[in-house]
Length: 346
Ligand SMILES: *[C@@H]1O[C@H](CO)[C@@H](O)[C@H](O)[C@H]1NC(C)=O
Ligand SMILES: *[C@@H]1O[C@H](CO)[C@@H](O)[C@H](O)[C@H]1NC(C)=O
Ligand SMILES: *[C@@H]1O[C@H](CO)[C@@H](O)[C@H](O)[C@H]1NC(C)=O
Ligand SMILES: *[C@@H]1O[C@H](CO)[C@@H](O)[C@H](O)[C@H]1NC(C)=O
Image (cartoon, rainbow, N blue to C red; front, top):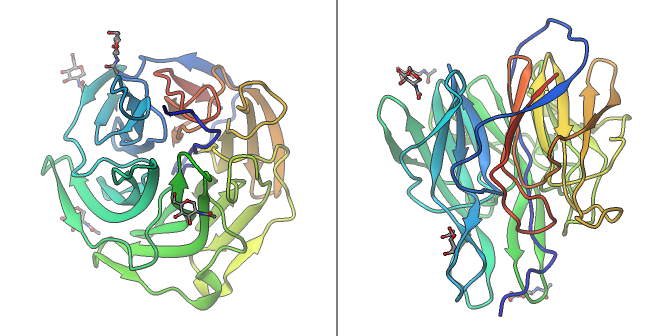
């Protein structure tokens, strides 16, 4: 019988945004629940008014296997209508997908998949696809280079290029519960539709990270917190790469996250990076973090912003204007998908 080992995962996130108007206090508001509870999905903003939720894991009643299954489900949320609709499924079911939007198209650049092994595990697959609302279909694009496939990478977008930093290549769901963290960095050029060779100093993160937060602000990519080789090996670092000067390579910020954690979600508002939730919290029964903390790259400083309305991990955030949308995730460490969807107003 399957026993839920304290083994799952979670996510990270990326986002883009503009914005300015100062607000008095931040707040949370519930939105229309996801049609199906969902975790370890990826979330992107598809302009002008759609939030897309891609892949991940959903509950299943198939008792011969795990209580959760990896899905190819794609759901679109309409911001003005507060409604969900089911879109074209991914060509392959994946969780911990690396995804980004460039030029109004969704790019999927690998992730983790269930290969149907006797001892359940999720393994890196390089499969990559593009979806544009105009075509209404997923099309294959060149997969991740040999040896660089992984899921749960920190993802950033700059100048038509998608940056994947770190991630995990294997997650054993039973037995030795191995979680293989990687430090490699990959860049996909969306205009040329090819993978780019990186200068040596940009080629690897200072240390392996998966389930980190990610953001690009002012041409710099930030990789916030995350973990190495397991949920509880949580980190408080901020790694920085100047995407306008890759030769300078990665640096480590002096400012550490107030609460070290992985399995976080991150969203950008007004040039500041908000980091939500996470797992691997030894101080709570659920193992989940509820903290909201914001990183100001100009001052290189962190500040606390209270708690999540529904604390969770394994979710993904996306900033649009002054708001950050946070659909689904798990309310307990490991696999416990929920349908809650809420929005944070900075
Ligand atoms: C599992 O079975 C229960 C009871 O029949 C049902 O309510 C639930 O919707 C099912 N869940 C899934 C994911 O099929
Ligand atoms: C939003 O609602 C309007 C008015 O009912 C409708 O025409 C439109 O198709 C809806 N859009 C989505 C994406 O659901
Ligand atoms: C964990 O188990 C898998 C197979 O279940 C094996 O391939 C892997 O080498 C093991 N890892 C360690 C660190 O023992
Ligand atoms: C953006 O997408 C449009 C239509 O989908 C295409 O014609 C254009 O070449 C794309 N631009 C870039 C920079 O990729």
